[in-house]
Image 1 (cartoon, rainbow, N blue to C red):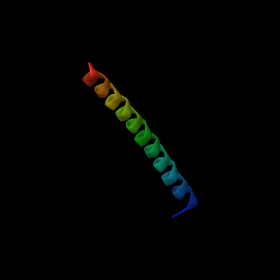
Image 2: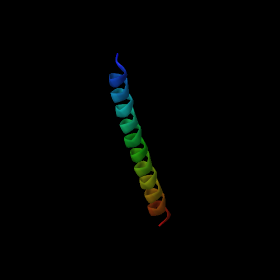
Image 3: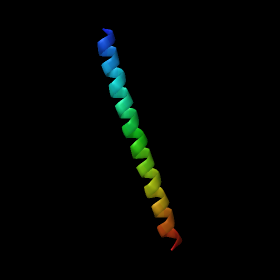
Length: 40
């Protein structure tokens, strides 16, 4: 595996990590919204 291939794979992993974090943040926001609605 060349260093260029390794760099590409690491870049893809970084992008996936960002997507995971965005999804977790959205999930947290939705959980808070559900909690707020349950209080009403």
